[in-house]
Length: 419
Image 1: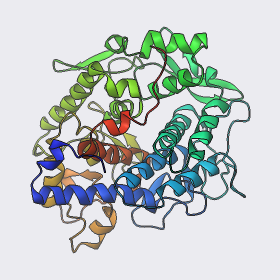
Image 2: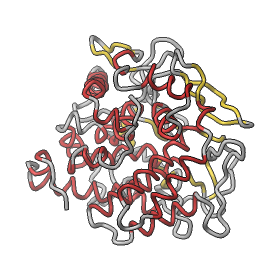
Image 3: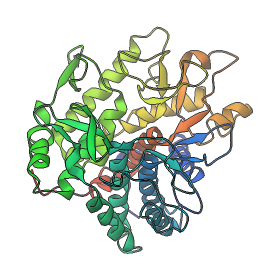
Image 4: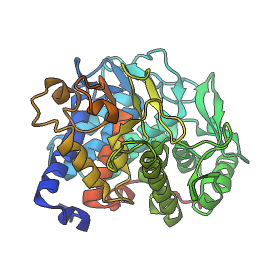
C-alpha cells in the first residue's frame, strides 16, 4: 500500500481514529447508494428512508467509480474492480434490461435516469454530468488497468462516442453549453466554473478540433489560469465567472477542477487561487455572530425542511447559512488544519457513531455533511433528510488527498497533450 502523508502520520491517536472512521464512512455512503445489479449510483442517500433511491445521477455514478478505486487502494473492498466493470457495462449498454438514456445525436447522457432501467427521468442531456461520468470512467480505467483492463477500453469508447464539438458556445468568454438539445448545445455559461472539466475532456477527445482547441488554449490552459475572471473578498482574489456581474462561486466549484482536471491539480497558480477560495470561505463565516472557527464551508446541498430545497451556497448568497462539512474536507490539501475543524464538530456536536439520538445517528450515519449551526444549539434540531452524492464527493476526495497525497489523483487523471 502506498505511503501515507506526513499530515496523516502526525495526527494524534484520537484524531486519527476519527479520520479513519470518517474516511471509511465516506466510501460506505457510496456503497449504500449503489444499485447491486446495474452498478449505477443514486443522486441522493436518503437519511430517513429506503436506499438506494430509484433515481440515478450520472454525475454520482462517475464519482462512484472513483470511490471504488479508493476502496481498492485502502483494501476496503476486494470486489471493487469487478463492481467498477459492472458500472461501466451498465453505462455502455451491456447489461440486459438497462439502457442508460443518451442524446441519440450527440451521445451526452441524461442527468437523471432510473436506477434499474436507465430510462430518462424527465431530465436534460447534461454536458457537465456526462463529463463527471466520463472522468470517473477514465480514472477507473487507469487505476484498474491490471485487474480489469476492459474498464479502460469501455471508458475510451465513452469518451470517443460523444460529439464534444457542441459544447463550444463562445470562445472569447470561455462559455460552454450546459445541455445538449436536438443535437445542438444550449444554455451557455461563461468561465470560470466547474465546466472547465467539460472543456478538458473535449480537448482530450478531439485535440485537433480547432474550436475546442481555441476554447481551451484561450481560456483554460495552465498558462491562461491567471487571466480567468476574478473577484476579491476583502483583498483576496478568487476566481469567478462573468455571468451576472460581481458574484462569488460556491466553494465546490473551485474543488472539482482541483481534483478532476490534471492540469489544474498540478498547477501552482491554480493551487494559490484554490487556497484563496478556502481563506475567503473561512473568513466570511468569521463575520457571522456567535459562530466558532470550526464552523464553515459554503457548499451545495439540500436544505429540505429548513430553507427550501437544494441550494448552491455562496459567500454572498447562503439562505440560513447552512454549513457543509464536506467543503472543509475538500480544502484539506491547502488547509490541512481543517481536519481539526471536522474533529471539533464531531466531538462537540455530531458524534454520529456513538450518540443516543436516533435521528442524529440516521442523519449522519456516514459522516458529517450539511448542518445548521443555530439548530445545533436548539433541543429541536434540524436534520437533513438526504445527502447529495455529487456534493459528498468533496469529502471523499479531500480525505483521500490528506492521507495519500494529491498524487493519487494526478497519477490516474488523463493528461492533455495540448497546452
